[in-house]
Image 1 (cartoon, rainbow, N blue to C red):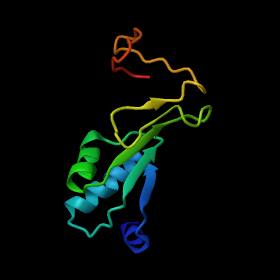
Image 2: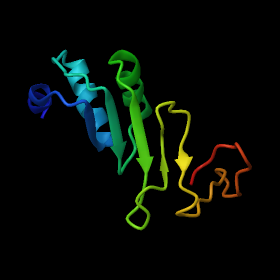
Image 3: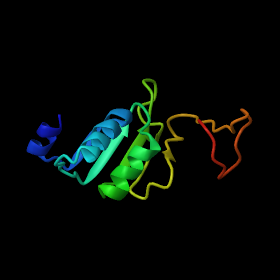
Length: 112
């Protein structure tokens, strides 16, 4: 897969977060030659924070993500500022809760 990425040299590399993180971490740790796309985008599952940090800070490639489901294609998405998720509130109702299950207040972080 790494050979194909290096041959094709895409501007955008997209896929599952855990897979992209593992692939790029492996390439970095093995000292492999790696084409660096302009941006990496992932969805479907999470990218470990350590992998995201390595990609953004050591490889210098911004990482963007979307939060989606079969029933709602784009619930939330990140823009180039990567400071959180923009929510598609005109398409879907999103409830953000605290770790104890109570609703989170405006500006408060939680889990959706």
